[in-house]
Image (cartoon, rainbow, N blue to C red):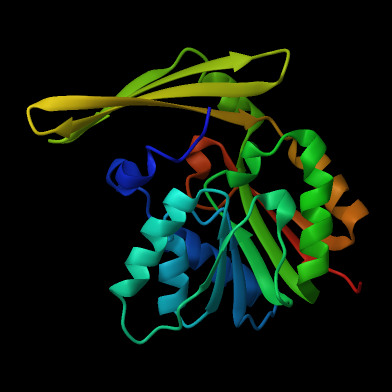
Length: 245
């Protein structure tokens, strides 16, 4: 079952409460703490490009990658409305198929995109990031903590506006150590409603295991932070610096 297809046109409406400015401020705080000058920035799992646009408006040259062509179409539309910013390079690539045209000063990934990767795929992602982040460059990403994902077992919610309704149901699979959540999407089409369905899966990743995998891939100076945006919701940030290739 595909993810972020039918959801793409309504994603921003149902996530309007997310303060992307807080994520951008946190990244820049880390850059400053680590004494890093960042000009070129990779946004991994960029989605509809809200963070990409925000960082571009702050002066960064952006590369934005996502596996969903539907989400990238929304992202491109946002930049058509912006003036005075360098358009990003959009890449329709999965996280384990990243193929950039050069290196970047830093890479970020927000809103638990890394949780979508199965544990067996993490080493390949980190290998590719070690390749495409320049030596001394930064990597910052966040995850939903395992406790957070387990706490959502059996959780249901409803999001709606005048023309759209989303029913969200979550079930935690102990055997797979993953949270499955289904989304029933209803979109008004004149006098009728069109129904579609998506299933998403987020896998539990222990922060210490991620640090070990990053070290094996060639990163150093790792840090686990719980003082970033949405930390009260169990969001954990992992920070690392790349070493020489």
